[in-house]
Length: 459
Image (cartoon, rainbow, N blue to C red):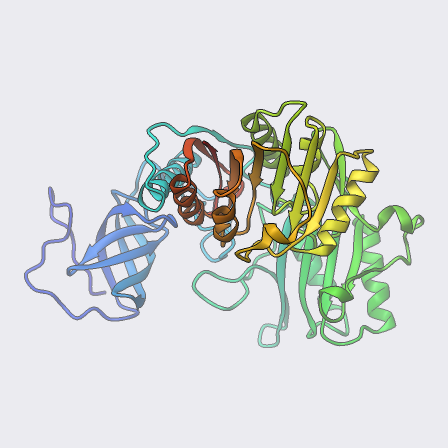
């Protein structure tokens, strides 16, 4: 092993000359920081290295993987001294599975990392300095994930079916038999799913399993590349019946997903899954977008409602409204709410949920909010000084915030799953006369570097 041992009192290994660093070679380094993704950062012969599984203050032996944009990517091979922030991962497959990247880091350190990321993004991309972020919203760190896409692969050399996530830094599926972060009704049945598919004729043509869980039901969507035999259909139905799963099949694209009703007594009541929010029951198709962490979703909706400071006479515009996760709780408190979403299917779902909950003071429209004139194409009328909620995808809401600064908007609450695009869009709003009054982080995705953020902007 080509390793350099650090001398006492030095923060980095002493070097007499720079070597040519080589891929797949091992080296010893001192970790001096963390990247936004939670990887350890170190210097090696004058070059920066991002290290999977390393923490600040540790001396680690690393293996260089590849070099991108003058920065080496590396993997921890062994740890010579441990950080006090290091913990034993709760999952035995944490070192190989790419589903989680921070299980070796204490939850307190994870929250600190994510808060610092949010603060730094707002400062550097949003020209906004916030000394004190709002308290972190937290929930259970295990068994929280209600949506997941599991890969399926039959490995002929091992004569085995794998079900799970991809390995870290590799395109292969991890050899795992349970997952600690997926809803345990599914996470603890990966081995049973592997055994089921191994016994099927279609074990080489089942491509993936989509998981969608609610409080009462769990739906599994089996994506199959070839038609299933009668025997395979019976095996799937028997398995799902035994484990209380709803069985969906996907023989082609998303539109082909359909519920298998052979063993369902009341088909009409099972076409949708349901979850509760703010005293409402919302229905969704298993492929619909819903928040993966319902505990944090409950808290996030409550914080959003509080920050909007809703009054009975208010009019609210909910952009990227989805199936009404925020829209319908808002409608209970205001005069009128208008939800806009890019998908007509989601607009229809919004109206379905409004009708089911006897809510009449909301309207839903379909519009491409990534177009520069999207709001002008929607026929809605809101009184002056209306309030706005934004909850866009990772790409953010640049096009629509540029439109909002020209309209009589009184207040904006922006919920985001990407702190960088949140900061960028906050900068645009600030140029238009808004100010970031407060912001906070919500730990929607424990043990990963992903996070949900929220910001309040006022004129």
